Image (cartoon, rainbow, N blue to C red):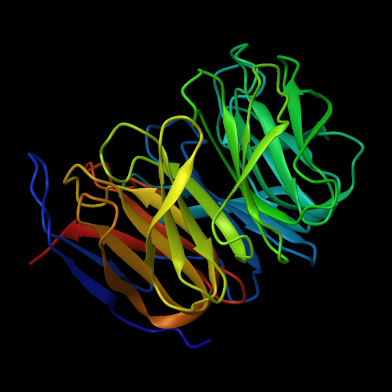
Length: 372
């Protein structure tokens, strides 16, 4: 892949109103890259891992082939000028979610691997990590991982999705060690990602599954005791979905579902507040959409959607406020094999930047600036 000098893909966004809304543009230069074309990156995680008040980035590398995961530190001006390996271990990593697992006030990391143990790395408070222990004995084809307080005890639990084996919830014992796996989803499900949120208004976290391999996407309702026997499908029943997010896209105060699909348009499903969802819109074309992020990029009061495409240009979809009309804008001029997308305010101006995780090409950050 050739490096491109100068600025890539300037994008004009027209704001729709609101106190802080602005016309915004996105651009990326050769200084806004992380890693090399040798890295097979599956995901980026933005977080302040060294405790200095700005947002750093962790890079999950490898996918099916062991590589070193990486940490890049923000110099305070949205430049990642210092980096180091997350640890000496190489792994087949798909995700590196962060959170304070042991209650000491800094951000630790779970390294989620394909066909290998998942690991906990503890932070020394300055952004240096040490492998502490495995999550459990399972060796499974993990495709995503996230941290969420599933049992409302004040610490962060771990959810992992596995392609072809049961997904799992691992409860934190309070010190960053996790208990036994609590299965959810189908025994041989092909779940690639899960979104967590209270979709039925009963106060506990429910699960929205993104499934592949001809398996229907599903909403799993929590019975309050981490039982998920109540399961309802959403979508066509045969969508090849690789990512799902929960967000209120139409401003009615209820969580809705947005999906990234492979070889078909992406979907928007409006929630009724009781765990039911109806299709409201399709957006995009027949791209290989691998990941999405939902965030208000122009601060006009509604959430927009950023889609990572594998083998095609990545895209931003601007919400008209109803969640049913989405204006497509391209990000960058190049088609990468993009596996993941993350957003964070890297320069502390109140507007989120966008980072894309590319397999076989440098990862790229797009800066969010006022339009000229």
